[in-house]
Length: 274
Image (cartoon, one colour):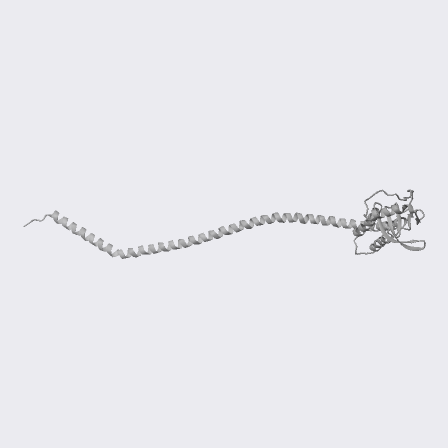
């Protein structure tokens, strides 16, 4: 019979206890595995939801950032446009101020024009009267045309629909026409009473120094005597010269020297006041 010592018995007892503890621990671990798996699954699900939510939030943030950037660009564009409008408005304001100044000056000028109009109208009337007196005292060439011009001026002065400036222009134009007569040579036809009969004659005007006539048949020639205020007959010797002068005035001959009965100039005083 074998003898079992206490020590061996004791070790066997410890081994059994350790084994029992290990088995119990394994059994306990095995029983807790479903609980841990569910918790882990919950964590994974929560993490997935957080990731999805974070992704959606990031998309929202990106969209908001894009909107903010777009609004910022719009703001800068509007700010730039506003700055341009400020410059434009400033320039327009300068123009408005300039126009206001011009209007003020224009109103001032209008007031002055009114004064000038009141002064210039009597002057024009005196000028027309003076021109009429001058024509009456002048060599009587183109009497119908010159008298019609004077009549037109007088009629014009009574019309309210013609500006003062236009009236003054026409008066000055009439004076200029009379001045031009003194620097030109002219031939024209007309009727002249000779020996109690009206005869069809050709007139030759040389400036204002001579007015001569030649009948169509060439039988009668004469000139205006400004001292006697009448026409007088001339010697037949002047017939050729007057005929030549008429052709020159009509541009039928080149300009040339002419022998004409020109009266000597005399000093004439006049009290006519313009």
